[in-house]
Each structure stands twice: as structure tokens, then as C-alpha cells.
Length: 106
Length: 211
Image (cartoon, rainbow over all chains, first blue to last red; front, top):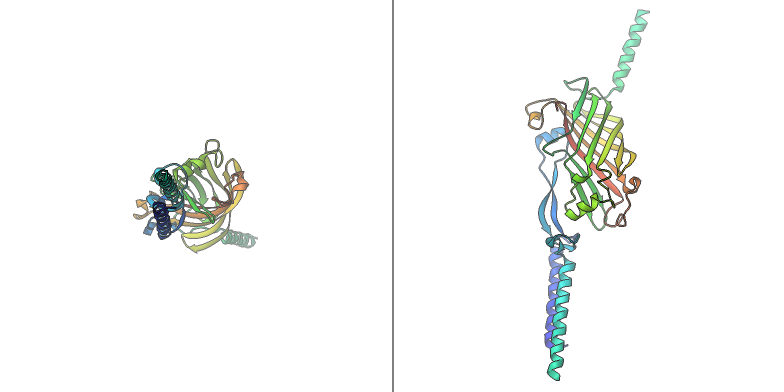
């Protein structure tokens, strides 16, 4: 492993660790969410009628470990997909620098 | 002889009233409450919890009618229905899965229904509020099973405040019960992993006797 390869591996690992830290700071949800359930405030009439306030889904992004499905681009943003992407890009650079080194020796 | 008849009649009436449990409000007699709300404020929620994920599905399209004698809630009869297609789980793909023939098969079985059979364990909380166990037939995915819902019912006689919601007297109902998906022939590989076998159903609805 040459110095460029070491730099690629180090940067890749730092980015993956950073993604995990961001995920934990965001609440550590298993699935990425693009909507969250919000409970509305109970009115006086709701209380008199003995019913609980209405809930509704509102647009809000929650960074999760894995995507819930393969539909919207935003739902694809997760620890696994981003880490996987960084792993693949790091791998490509790793082999790119390895090839160059072999050519230089020849 | 007349005295005996009078006494028997009084005793009979007293017994009847002692067993009849209902609301002590100005309105009396048999009333029909319609739960259709064009503003979508009546809501049913479906809750599944597993170690992997908690899922809440909500529907704002609760419909139905109930009829009962205001002074005797045990006379309650009626049907409540929820269109399967109206359930929102917060993820579009999951909504599509829910409607598919692998799950609820909304095309073949478009509605979930709860038909009230009887009411028991009536407890008066206030003159216009009581709790009860409502026994009914719950139908989902073409299968009907008897379930028992714990319900709280509140009766509000028409006032300026109630008119903000709907005309007429209002009946607020909060009910909940659990169902097992396997009881309704809903079988899928991810039940027990991402989706729980037991689903908690909560219904919050307000009906009016003037609609």
C-alpha cells in the first residue's frame, strides 16, 4: 500500500465513521424516513368529546441506517447506502493508484 | 289486587331502569349518529411494533352510523367502515404494498368494517360520558372475527361550541382493540420482522345526529 492508497483508505474510513456519528446524533433510526407522524394540539371540544387529537404525516427527513425501499432518491439516503458509495469510490481510487504505481515501475 | 299490580309495575320499571345504563342528557329516545366527516377529522390508526420498526398507519376516512337509545347504551347497533386505500403509513411504497394482494388486497376487499353486536361492562364516568366493552364483528381481507373493543363515549347536546364541529348533538367515540393478522389470512414473510403479528387499532370519531 503506497502513501496515496493509505490516504484514500484513511479518508474513506473517516467519512464512514462521520456518517455513523451523524446517524447516531440524528436519533439512530433503523429506516430512513421522509415523513414523520405529528400529533395536533387537542382543542377544548376534543377534550369534551373524549377523543385524542388527530395525527398527520408531515414532510421531514430522518437519516436512518437503511433505506425503507427503492423509490424516492431521498429515501435512499442512509448509512448503508452512503457508506457503500464511499467504499466503492475509495476502492476505485485504491486500484487506480495501485495500477499507476505498477506502470511507474515498468 | 290493584296495589299488587301497581307495586309489580313500579318494581319492573325500577329494575328496567337500574339495568339500563346510558347518558343523562336533555336528549332522549333513539338517536342515529352519522360519523361521515367531509373534513376528514375522524381517524383510525393502526399500530405495529417490532424491534426493527414501529409503523403507524392512519386513515381519515372513517364512515358509518350507529343507533341507540340515549338512556340505554346497550341498545347500540351500527357499522363503522374504513377504506383500505385510505390508509397512509408515511411511506408511499409501503402504502402500495399494504393495498397489494400480498397484504390487504384492497381491490378484492376494499373496506375494513366493524359491526356492533352488543355492549357490556358499561360504566358511567359522568352524566354525558361512559366507558364500555363493545363486542363486534371485525372484517378484514374477507375474513370476519369477533373482537372486543374498549370504548369511551361522550355525548354533547348541541350548543354554540358543538356547532363549530357539526350541527346537532355530538357523540365522541374513542375505541381500541387488537387483531392478529394471521386470523385474517394475512400472511407475509416479513410479519414478525418489520410488521408485527398483532396490530393495535385505535378509532377516534365524532358523529352527529343531524346529518
